[in-house]
Image 1: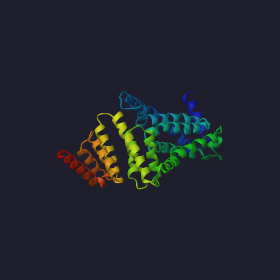
Image 2 (image 1 turned 135 degrees about the vertical axis):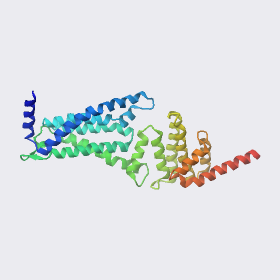
Image 3 (image 1 turned 135 degrees about the horizontal axis):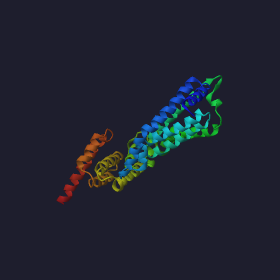
Image 4 (image 1 turned 30 degrees about the horizontal axis):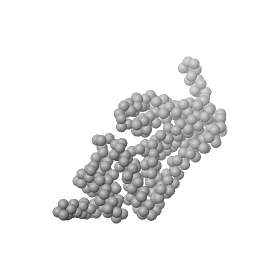
Length: 316
């Protein structure tokens, strides 16, 4: 087919669709094609990160340009089906966008929510443009195929995972407020192997005024997450960052024990912490943190008490 014949087909097909729909469909086709080419070097760069030991495939996928590139490819394919009057194009977009976003949960659940929200938000605008009528019929009505049940199922799953699941998790683990954020924090802690998310969730449990379960349940749950965080730092973290990570977790852990009045446990954790970080670093971390600095006087009293007891032991 030469250029003149191609233009004739495009013109003939376009006369059957609403002008605004035509503009959007052809714009999407061109933009997605340009994005595929433009993002390809960045995808190759992202894959190059796998040469570095600290980068996993999950991190490369989530932090790089791979999801955006795959979304551009699926958009190009799905939009082409719509241009050929086949409703399967919308189904391709619905399914592919969902599958593209699923691995992002392993990086950060809120990142999954934001990315899938952007993709499906754009898809909603796209779908609404297909409802614009020409000669009394919309493009959807003129297209062949019927995938309503499948499409509704996919949309229902996306809505559940994006809007309903996190607050359900937040309530189930023991919170009574900020359920969405606390639910995402819990999911991040379970799905991500990094100490950071596990320590952050332990901190949420330890210091949140929105905890609705008993104090002994708070104590047990927070300790579990802090201990898991410490284990990961000890066994899996890069030596270059261990000192900072230990300081971060121990500061939270000790202040939590002081908050609940477990003085002996706090003493034990303090003495354990000094095997990895200095007293000055711990004190600075607590004083710098807007939540932990509430307990800086208690912490100083604990340190002073331990120092005095050590001096007495020496004299005896």
